[in-house]
Length: 500
Ligand SMILES: NC(=O)C1=CN([C@@H]2O[C@H](COP(=O)(O)OP(=O)(O)OC[C@H]3O[C@@H](n4cnc5c(N)ncnc54)[C@H](O)[C@@H]3O)[C@@H](O)[C@H]2O)C=CC1
Ligand SMILES: O=c1[nH]c(=O)c2[nH+]cn([C@@H]3O[C@H](COP(=O)(O)O)[C@@H](O)[C@H]3O)c2[nH]1
Ligand SMILES: [K+]
Image (cartoon, rainbow, N blue to C red):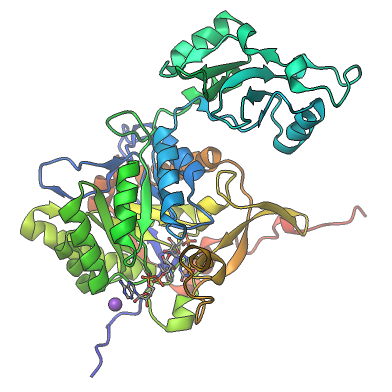
């Protein structure tokens, strides 16, 4: 006979936190959100920690190198999407590891044989007023000059005038030598009153540009997540099929943390993948997704560094409808946390847990942490920001961004081009959708973090570990859910009154 769980499975929205005593030193400014991402022994420190408990989902619509830099700047970690060729994913890792705050790879480049018209077209296309002139027109070609809007006058100059005739030639340029620090670059910028400083290598090849206007922006990240060499940390998603080729390429590129990306991690394929990685590389690896004690223990015994929890709770998920597998996200986290805590008691090894999917309100993050998760993974949340890889569109008068599931045909299409693999899926497990555009990552994340810290103070907790120990959590009845929102009032923003 089948096994029946005694309790219904529950979601975050069914719970609330009950405040504890808030002492006077318990203020948001004093809250520390550092959290482990790799397993560690009692009384030892985890080798890798996050500065905030946020990771971005292994999804095409969420986590590319740009998102990875933005999230690491703010203390979290992105997991670069795995539904792309091994080469392009490894290239993304290299871009993040090679990223130097303030040093930008030139995105507007021409050769000396191009014309003023080409300069104007490029400006229209990219919005940049600085164009690097290189021998071959590539961002890393031999630098021959720079064009800025001060080098030409549209009213006087002919549109077919070659770039070589009006660019500021290399012989007149102030430049930096590759390897200089941001401070040294900025000193040159101030000393020579420059707007842009080109940086070149020993062969006069352009490596980066440093812009004066970026100076202040680069001081805004006190929380950035760095490795021992002061490079941004980055994660990457892998699968249980091509790992023998993918993992060596990602490790070679410098990846810090891997995670096996699957709806269902309780499989022999995942155990094989984890064992292979642990035996051959010194890199952290998470496994999942699981929603129960058995799945958790199976993957921990295979050697996983953290465990990811969640089946079917994601905003673009239709797995529960399509396959009838899954579990309410709160119940799944609770059971896995209980198993983790018992495992810690028995073995003295602490396994961090990631709650993946289904975060709708900011307070859901706080609840996930209070229930014992060490960090969360979010897709929809990050897809809304400037830094996500997808198009911003105007739909029905509102700005939106595209967001699609990794189980959708749209996401799985890459295999067709990459491996000549299957043409279409038998059935889709995710939808293609829009999410409301919300602006910059930093602005939104700061607000969310502010709320989490404030709630932690209500609960008398200055760290995530303290919150996990002290939290008092109550179920809410269906009726009190109504009480929790604005009710029995007429909301102004939804009402239009006529003047008379
Ligand atoms: N968290 C969630 O609730 C869900 C997530 N997704 C996302 O969709 C994407 C695809 O997920 P899945 O379909 O679960 O991917 P998957 O790669 O784990 O599984 C695809 C299919 O291949 C099989 N398989 C895996 N490794 C194999 C091997 N070595 N040899 C033979 N067969 C093997 C699996 O059993 C499954 O039938 C992922 O990005 C995942 O995160 C999809 C549905 C739900
Ligand atoms: O059923 C699914 N079909 C899909 O196509 C799909 N794509 C992603 N995911 C999972 O959803 C998580 C992101 O969830 P949120 O948007 O709610 O943050 C992600 O982190 C994944 O765990 C999928 N689940
Ligand atoms: K399974």
